[in-house]
Image 1: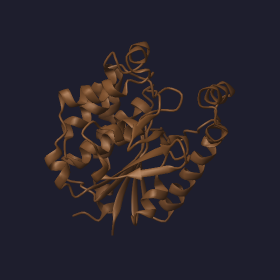
Image 2: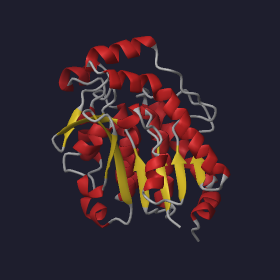
Image 3: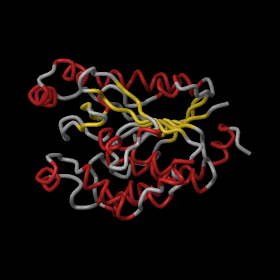
Length: 282
């Protein structure tokens, strides 16, 4: 039985997922596979390298620094989100354990959106580079960030078309899926407002990107419908926040994000027996 983790993005709301994964590491829930996009890609790496402390630094510390969102990263990097500043902060405060990562028993898949083909592409452990361009490209949000170059191609956040990588998890042979969501129960993704569609068209001059943005909420609902069907079959287990602490994808206040991180840890701890039974762990 191959059980995998499917991690949703969500900007700084991913601090919740960081708490979930920290609980996993501290209670030996070491699964053979994980797949994620956007902010989740930054969190799956320390899960695979077994660095619980890096999860907090990534999920909370790095997202609360002054260079992460706004005019400062725009002036320095040309992005509203400071991708380089974020990775630099993480490396300074919790350097990546390459030795452990290179020996890990966990396969990591990170999704990217190919700007030329307009399709999702997934890269794995062997593709991770020392500058973490793979992770940066995964976090390059539409409109808010410039596309990143990785392996001589232009990429950005695959969340434009694939927010829940359940199809990839199935494709890679997982029989069961633990889906980590950053959205509270009952969340409904709304259609992109007209100004976003206008801005995307202005910035990218590409009808496919604009149309993908227009249909993003439909794809999100389709992906969750598939997860819900698997859940009814006993093949999926969803971990998501059951409290609303007022966190958005742009929250950068540690006094708010630290409790959000802790909520992810505590809610996972409360379901530990259920999770282990689902994974068929002793």
